[in-house]
Structures are given as C-alpha cells and as structure tokens.
Amino acid sequence: MDSKKEPQERRKKRIAVIPGDGIGQEVIPQAVKVIQASGADVELTDFDWGADRYLRDQLTVPPDGFAMLGRDFDAILVGAFGDPRVKTNIHAKEILLGMRFKMDLYANVRPVRLLDAALCPLKGVEPKDVDFVVLRENTEGVYTDAGGVFKQGTPDEIATQEDINTRKGVERIIRYAFQYCERHTKLDGSPRNKVLMCDKSNAMTHAGGLWQRVFKEVSGEYPQIIAQHMYVDALCMQMVRDPRQFDVIVTNNMFGDIITDLAAGLQGGLGMAASGNIHPGKTSMFEPVHGSAPPIAGKNMANPFGSILTAAMMLAHLGMAKEAQKIEAAVLGAVRQKKTTQDIGGKLETTEAGEWVANQVSHP
Image (tube, rainbow, N blue to C red):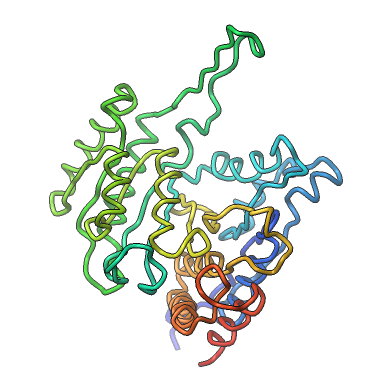
C-alpha cells in the first residue's frame, strides 16, 4: 500500500473546561457528561478559575494563562462568572473579558432557535419562525472600559464612558457576518440570504457613521446576499413583532449583548441560549449566554440545556458534526417530552435533565 494514502490517525481535540461560578458549576458538568456520552474524540481538562480560587489565593488568571489556552487547547468550554462575595467582580472581568480581548475572540456568535412552540411567549409562532443568529463584535465598544470619573462624590462629578470602534474591528465582524451567511443554512436546510446591520447611527453619529460606511463597502462584495439596516430600538420592536424576518444580524458589542437577551426570550429564556466566541483558525471559547445566577446557585434547578447546546456548537466548530447533531436531537426530544427543568415546563432537576439527555445521546 502506498504510505501516502494511509489514513492519518486523528488527534484528539483538547478542550479546556472552566465551570466558573454559581450555576456554571452545576450546568457545565452536565454538558461534559453529554459530550462524553456522545463519543466525541476529545480530551477534557478542568481549570478552577473563578471566585473560589480568587478568594482563596487572589489569583484570577495565571501569568501565562491565556497563552497556554491558545497554545495547548483546541477550544474552551466556560460556564459563568460572577459571585456576590467578590464585590468588584474583578475575577469575572479578568477571566471572561480577558479571554475575549487578549485571545482576540472578535466574533460572538449567538444562534436564536426555537425548539418547540410551547417555549415562545409570542402567539402563533412556530419553530420555523425563530431561526436567526446574532453576530456581536466582541473586543471593542464600551467594554474596553475607556473613560473615567472626575470630581467623584461631589455635585460636579463627571463620568465618561467611551465607545471604541476601529476600522479593523468593524470590518472584520461585518465580513464575518457575510461569510457566515454564505456558509450556513437554517435548520430546515434552506439557505441564509440576508445580513442586517443594527446600530444607532442617528444618535451615535461618529461610531455609527463608521459602521454605515464599512457595511456599505463590504456588502457590495456579496451581491447575492440582501443587505439590510435597522436602528437598535426598531430592531427590538420588530424582533417581538415578527421574528420571521431575521436571518443574520451583525452589531456592536453593547447592542449585541442587549438584543440577544431579548432574543433568548423567543427561544425559552436564557437557559436555552448558546454562544461561541470565535476567531477563525484560532482557539475559540464557548459559553452559555446566561450568567452565574447566584439566587438559584446550589439548588440543582438551573437549566443545563444552554450549556449542553453550547457544547454541541463547540463540537460542530471542531468538525464533529455527527456528535453535535446527536446532542441537538436529544435536547429537542427532552423539550418535546418535558424532560426538562421547571423554567421550561418540566419537573426535573439540573442533574436529572442532564442525565436524560446523556442517556439519549449514548444510544447508537
């Protein structure tokens, strides 16, 4: 046999697992359980970065932490950060925003998909009506924390918060949106063919003007894709009025954060929402959209499906489409059979819902 034609052994994909704080420590183990049940050829390594470690030794991220993640791992699975014991939330900022900024994970990808009509608060909406994706610029905007306070604590106090937008940052997320539209289909197999840019350029004229100019230029390179625009306030109204009109939405960091929480309401709440933080060709990070939810942490009642669907999204990104599809099908089955937590109509605890999905995934 010609040695050049011999199949090469596929290297295990290495995944860093960082459960974080609060319910992250409950839902991420369920996602891990489902990944293992799927038979995905991966190697999982746990990290204890979070509030507990910070309170113990004042360490948020080791000095070479981000370099190590980018060098040694193919993907990162993250839970949530935020703990009332850390008043400044410094650990959350340094770990989560640190990964996004220092690893340059510029495309925050948040699919909005309704698995069952019973989960949507809108009347007459079917699963096929809610199937779009929001692409959020992930490394600029107001999240850079540029600005300051002058004369704090006095009647003359002044606070400024600057919205940072670079030509490079705006262009690459807009281009990513058109490329995403070209390469992805809807759940029913139909092609995606619309990219809508959302801004508030009638008020934020400088930043909005840059987004407008770049969007017009880049959209001209993709004549087969319909280019659209809405102001963010109009988008929020239309998202509730008729979500069927949306396909791919691209926007800045802050607006993307806000509208995806609204969009999550269309698919059953934040407990159902998955996301990825992507830099094509580099180690990317995946996290459920929800936060650490301190009021319900430790009660075994958090919905694990956002984390499980995030795990499926991560596996698909790593080229494991078969395993990802098995997981998504199992979650769909759980929703339809009410094998879910209470927030979406079931009676199961977090661990029970995760176990049910894992059992379904493990079947050939």
